[in-house]
Figure (cartoon, rainbow, N blue to C red):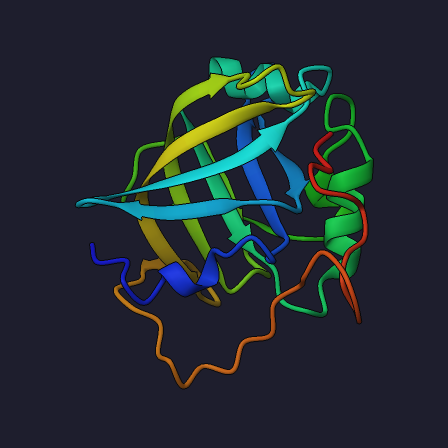
Length: 185
């Protein structure tokens, strides 16, 4: 699947919601990430973001191989706030944020994307490690699928039209989400 036009959606100034399977609670846990890096290296792509070791989601990333990255639009501040400030250990963030989980088609994973988010990507975690003694560990993943969320299901996304006038939720300024860089719970 080509990602050439999708690359523009993953820039460090995008706020995203990352979902990882919580086997103990039998649901996808959602976290807000305010700093995400997406790079094309050679013939492949890599996505990275920070997660603090004390957070519930860190434990989930240690145990799960796949995660989903949901792209928020500029009006979805409240979703970002709930997913970035409430721990998913005891609460279902889909219910709290009043958003709909949607099964990801075409990939056999225990994960759900957010129906209300227009685009998402599924990635396979390749590493979770601390680099240079930082306070956060870095999740490194390899994208394996790019999708557009439809009204009833998800469908593979081969490219995003440059004519799409999609306004992203950004970390700072204007209607931006100012919850910090990591924001993961």
